[in-house]
Structures are given as structure tokens and as C-alpha cells.
Image (cartoon, rainbow, N blue to C red; front, side, top):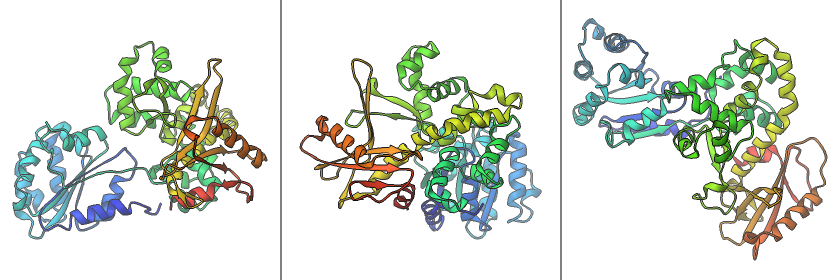
Length: 455
């Protein structure tokens, strides 16, 4: 797959390694997100790139020295008794400043806990160094803690800290060369992880890609969440259970706690961890304070993780006995509803990038209210204008069925007129539909409009 996006990340790395004085850059992000590819794109042949593994520290130094010897002949002719000796020798042997990158740095720390302290002493004297140092890793919490935890040796030493994010939705259309509707369908499953895109591109269509990589016990992504969780936590059972329950419809803290038969207070730490890692998100109705835990809902934020826990986990028994066709038929039947929830989410994210009647709006939220009879009233999108004079109300539909646009618009306006936060403000009704149509009576946006506004 060709290299896409990452312009801002590349710019930041190139700027920091262009400084005359040596620098320390920290790069982290979940596995398969493209960290190594990014570094190789920037560093190329200008420096040393070393991928650490889980072998003993003495073996790691041998391997590291061997890689360095490709730039500094004979560097691996010496046995280095410790990391301090290796880095001091490296500095003495470098004639012109270069870039040294250590990928999967947490593996080195695991076998050599003293290494962060060694690097602390080195970076405290960086005016004497002849290289820029880049440390990269998939263990997000460990990498973040190295530079953000005041008790850790490298705290305050980094010149640049980059958390690599998933590739935005708009680039999938460019990579797959497909329609806007197909882009939404594909991204709702694979998300923005480059490695997943590569696997998808190898197959002729979406269903063959799912059958080969996800909905098969031999698929390369069949155990993907377990591998991701092992990077971050010792006990993966809590996280796996929480995500399974959320995917099955338990979105409130009390519901999750009840089904796990645990006090709600015991779930604060695992929920916070999953939020920090980007796997789940906490949703509040428009206008509610972040402190209002009673109205909070927990949703799976990552598209692939959401797909996995919605379709792989419930049907694992069928997958294990190679009933793939049965599973695919079940997925096909439920996928439109699954994608519709994703469509709502990306439409909300698009609101700050759009303009309606020359008016810009703040970030959008969903709004819902449950009555005493347990009947729920919901509006898919609610956003206040920057000047506070208007309220945008949006309805999202991901269906091939024809809809009465004027009726939907009138319903939105009628709902808004009953809501306190709409009083005294201009209501701007907008429809977000799978198929874009032109109407003089109502503003309608389709998938390509959403992709274009995120450009």
C-alpha cells in the first residue's frame, strides 16, 4: 500500500531532527498503526533504525551493534558489557550527526530496566552528543509514562512527543478507489489502521477480506484484540468482558457492572484505561456536564474493535467449526444497522468542518431523554453555532429506502421547539442521507459531502 497522510507527523519529526543540538523524540501508538513505516519514511538511509525484540539484553546489544555497523563499519567487533558503554562508544564513533531510532523500545526496557536512567544521563548532556534519538513503541501507557510521569527518568527530556493516530476516513477512498458509500462501509469495519487496509487490498472485495482475515479461526486478525491488549495490561479479561458487554447493548455503567457482578466503582480504572487507549468513548447528551455520570453512555470508539466484538465474539462457536458462510450471512443481515451507527458518528464529527447559511457550529452531540414510561426521545445531531444564536438539529439515515424529506425536516423542527436549549434560537434542520438528493425545502448532505468537508 502506498504511503498516505501523516503530513503533520512527518513535519514535526523532520523539524526536530534538523536542530543542530541533539534531540529526543518519543513516538507511540497502537500496534499496526504505521509507526515503523512513518519513521522509515522520514529517516530513510540517513540514520540507524533498530527493531528491538524480547531477547536478553546482551543479545539485544549485539543486534543493535550489528545494525549500527552498517553505518559505522566495525562497530559490532566489540562486545558491549552494558548500554552506557554502547551509547558512549557510539557517540565517539559518529563523525557527522545522524538519527538513531529504537523501535519497540519497551522490549529493551523489559530486559534492561536501567535503560531509561542510562538515557536520562545521556540526554542531560546532549550538548556533547552527535546524534538525534528516536524512541518508539506500541505499549502506549508505558511510552506515555516514560515522558509524562514525573517519577520516571526521561520525564521532561523529550523535544517532541507524537501519539500516532488512525488515518482519517477521507484517505480510504483514495486507497481503495471506491465510491463514497463504499468508503463509509469499509471504514466502519477496518477503521484507520494501515495494516488492516493492506490486508483488505489483497482481496477482491470486502466479504473475501473478512472471510480470510477476520471470520476464520486461521485469520490473521482473528485474535487481534488479545494481541493489542497484551501490549497494555497484564489482565485482559476485564477489558475483553467490558467490550463484549458494550457491543451487546450494555452502555451504562450500572448495566455493565450488574452483568459483571461487580461494584461500579471497581470499573473506573479499566474503563479509564480503555478510553485512554482509544478503544471506547464516553458519550453524554447535548448540554450535559461531563460530571454527570448518570447519563453517561459507553460506546466502542474504534471501528475494527467494534466490528470484532459485535460479530466475531458472538459467533465464535460457528467460526471455530468452520461455519463461515453462516457467519457471513448473519453479518450481512445486521451490517446495515451497524454501519448506520457509524454514519451518525462521523456526521457528528463533520459538523465543525461544515457551514450552514454562512454559520459555523461547535462540536456536535447526540441528545436523548428517557421518560417515566421508559420511552426514549432522541435527536441524532445537536450543535450550537459559534455565535450562540442558532441550533443545528440533524437526522441521519443509512438506508436505501426512500424517505419523506419534508416530513423529517418538520419533525426535527417540532422536536426542537419543545426543547429548552432551542428556545430563542434559530433552528437549522439538516438531513444526512445515504443517497444525496437536491431539495429546495431542506438541506441534505450525503456521504461524499462528509468526505469532502474532512479534506
